[in-house]
Length: 95
Image 1 (cartoon, rainbow, N blue to C red):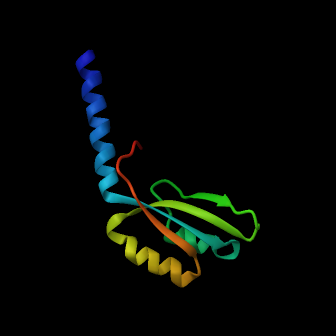
Image 2 (tube, rainbow, N blue to C red):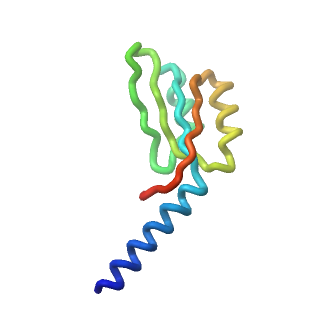
């Protein structure tokens, strides 16, 4: 019915907003030799996005992490040797 569709849409929007309040996106660069250790620190909600950089020795990793853990995660990544660590606030999501 029409009302059921509207209720589902509102539910999806609320869930997306709630997710955006609990998570941030962390993006960083890491040497290929350290990639698996870095991914163990930022496994993501499903899995991280890993992209090759032009030099071939580094990867760029993007991953959702719980907002409450972001400072510890940034410290762990830094201590591992990751660089260019960025935290991006989310305003809304659809998962």
